[in-house]
Image (tube, rainbow, N blue to C red; front, side, top):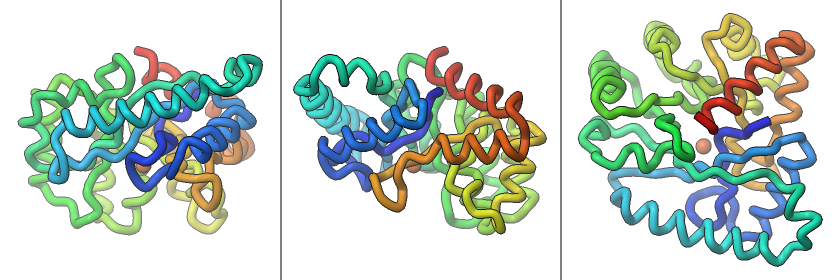
Length: 237
Ligand SMILES: [Fe+2]
């Protein structure tokens, strides 16, 4: 199983604050049956350029690798495989960024994209189509569940009709009173991925197993396997 969206990399964003927390989170992922973790720290193009981000990410990744190297080999081998990525915050000028492929997941062209929390507009979708057409990347829409109450239903529908992979966070499935719409999107194949979007070992800890158990219970084993396969493929293309 792949967790395609995590903030496990230490000290780069509002996720793991140090390597000890990163390792604890990787252990939690392992206990949940996760064998591949995508490290996807936030990237904000209005705060730094791609080179600066990649440099910071590289330093943090080396620190994590070095700390993992101190663990007994027996344990190290049981921890999930790590794949580098980024959670790229939407900016209207993103299409002009020539280095977008360097922010994609591993060696794929799949770009984890965080849409804005401000009201969406037709213009946003025009720009999104430009990005899909020109930049040579496939957007993977992060945590659509977080926009359901924020954005107009017709825009949510427009995202579902983009024909790109859509993520739901496991967190939303853990709340019986709010999970209905997210479950419906997963059932109807309008959403294709379940991720943890974990940030720490507390309130936002890795929880993919719990979310997947809800999928199994509500939508069946076959749908759970489809979601698992989709995440595996998007990390490995
Ligand atoms: Fe995230």
